[in-house]
Length: 87
Image 1 (cartoon, rainbow, N blue to C red):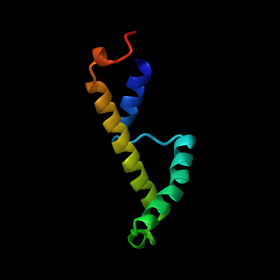
Image 2 (cartoon, one colour):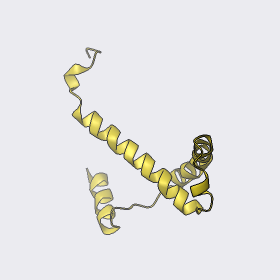
Image 3 (cartoon, rainbow, N blue to C red):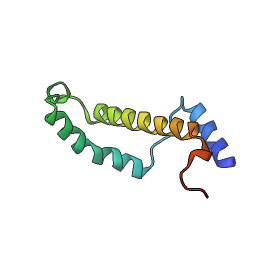
């Protein structure tokens, strides 16, 4: 697929990084509050209190990227014939 090849070429030229879309950037910003709430609930806010927004965003991105990669690996490992729906 041409679009995949173009994206892959861009990622290779950018050390694996592709610029975020405006929607992705907003989603990362929107995730800061629930991330902070979880840190407070777990008593872990102190080490993160003086971190910059960019550092917090990096942590959020790492979590999202790891989650998505795991989902892709799991989906690829599924046996298509094991689906309970027969069609």
